[in-house]
Each structure stands twice: as C-alpha cells, then as structure tokens.
Length: 279
Image (cartoon, rainbow, N blue to C red):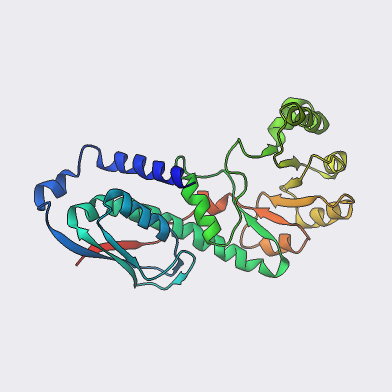
C-alpha cells in the first residue's frame, strides 16, 4: 500500500505542478522560509493526516510538519490542527493536493462514522463499495477505515463478487457458482466469494455451496431479509445493499445481517472545508 500511495502522490503532483509552480516561482524567492497553519472550518472526523505528512515529505523532506490531531479524531469547526514550516515555495506546491485529499477523506470518514454509530448496537459492519473516484480509490477506502467502516473488495482482482449481470450471462445462479468453483480450483485460487441473490429462491439454490463465503441480498426489504435468514441453515454471512440510507439503516441492522454496504459513503459526499494559510 505504501508504494501505491507514493505513486498516487507522484501522479497527483505531476497533474497539478507540471513543469513548475509558475506563480510562486515568479513572486517568491526560492530561499524564503515561513509557516502555514492548517485549520478545519466544520465539525468532522478528521482524515488524511498521515497522507498529508507523506505529501509534505515527498514534496520537500526538509519541511517540518506538526499536526495536533490524529486520523479518526473528532474536530470541531474553526480548530487549528497543525502547521507546516520551511520553504514557502514548497508549501504552496503541496497546498492544493493536501487540502483536496484531506477535505474529501474527512467527508467520507465523517459520513462513515455517522452510519457506524447508528448501527453500533447491532454488531453490523459498514462496508464501502467500488463506487469511488478513479485514481483516488486508495484514499477513499482509507478514509472509510478511518471512519470505522470496513473495506469491501478493493478491485476486480481480490474477490469474486457474482452479481446479477454475471448470473444473467451465465444462464442462472447455479451455473455461475459452479463455473466459479471450477475456475478457482483449476487456478488454485483461494479468495473470498460473494454471491448476490434477488430472492429467496436463489438464496436456497446456493446456500449449500461451500465455496460461497457471503451472500449479498440486494434491494430486499427488511421484512424479506428476516424471512430469508430463517432459511439460513448453513449460517452464511449475509450482506445487505441497495436503497439503504440514514432513515432505514437501523431497520436493516435489526434483521440480523452481518454487513451493510453503502456506495453512498464514497460517491455522494460534500467535502469538509479545510484551509491552509501562510502566517
């Protein structure tokens, strides 16, 4: 993961800086030193502190970076959270990337933490999805973990997730699961297998397959999940998704499911307002 983060920072800096920060080069002496304070302008669960440190180090190892809070802490609005001192040109190079990352990551962590707390009494875990910003997934999923959530599969390569389109293309759900079983055996792969079902009939068809680690019930009503769990004689782990939000997540958690997955955690957030000011 460390190398992936480093590559992300490299590419993000290249996108922003290109051949150089022309404005800073034109207006500020390269030897000029100074200090900038970072502060949060909204209540939030802060996220991106460790990433911010890595960004600063990668831009200029001579910068001194001191944060007074850690990832996952609650921060109230108008709170200074740290400072960066050293080359002014270096600070201005990294300003936008650092803020963009922290603002979005803090928004995701805050939203995740809200859902986690809503269903905490029911021992149900909150999962993210692949509904993430291209080339920023590593940071968004990092933010979910900071907020108390759990990462679902990271991509198409680390978990089998047989969904409705796979089932349709395979002919039916049994064909899809049996083909998956053969593929994993032939390739000597041991990775998690999750299968989406659309109704109780599909659930009953696959619940006895040993290869299936978790069953995803998508767009089920809570009352239908309760009925389905009565048929869970093989004690498969159950994940619910689809149409779940703040107004109904508790009702889903009460059904006895193990996980709830929410694409909303990452694809529908408003960035937290965070500023970096030279003093």
